[in-house]
Length: 345
Ligand code: NCD
Ligand code: ZN
Image (cartoon, rainbow, N blue to C red; front, side, top):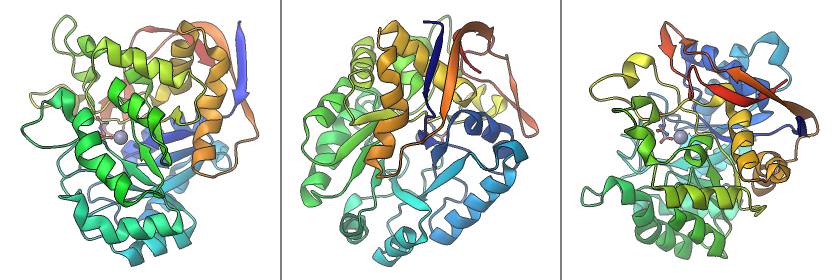
């Protein structure tokens, strides 16, 4: 196969940042995806519908004129201990907020204002279940007694299961799953729970963090896992099961914030997102499953229409730039300076 045409995909988990940094990365996502679920972990976080509306307007204003009509940012609110049922109603009524993001406090980049104990959010969650607004979870416990590689596994039993029992009709996206445990859990549950999967967790196992020395550009959260987990993710993504869909978690940080003594978590993949997924699916002999994973399953879960236009990928070797512009700084993209075998045309 030398070309592959699929319905235009959506990115169900994207960090766009703000201001000049957003202007630098936005065109890469808008070029490939029709829509993206925009993460609210700005500083300060996007906690109200008014903030989401303002952020959405900044995104639209930053789109190059040629992409103005073809990219739709889908907004999320950042759940806090103080999110009230009225905030949830307002979000739903806005028509632009499509999910509420739950970061356990301290779990990841800009999550200090996150939820300290999910029981503080029961009233908000009750309202979400009632008016059908999905919860997007960063599924990692932050308990200091839990090993960093086990944080996702423990989250299932300690937080997610009790939450699902209390709110059985609440639609939940288990974001960026990274373990066999999470895949099995999502596969087996009868609740309305789906999961997004990143390209980098499909391509790398945790050895990549340490290959030939410490590799800060392979540090993200949830952290990369063992090979057995990567294989489970590939199986899930290529299975055709509608519970699994594309979410890049493309999370740009400046080179100086990555290559430092205490580097930020996050991998930037938006410059070649669909090509990276295509590589995974090709290697798994499942290119015929890429379209549903990238373009159908997410839209169906979020009860949004599927896209109508198409993109075409060509089998062509190209070299990913060694760096990209990122406001006043540099951004090191995933696979910088390395070859990729698919190219969107
Ligand atoms: C994300 C970021 O940088 O905003 N980082 C990451 O490693 N994925 C936050 C997140 O999604 O956890
Ligand atoms: Zn993320």
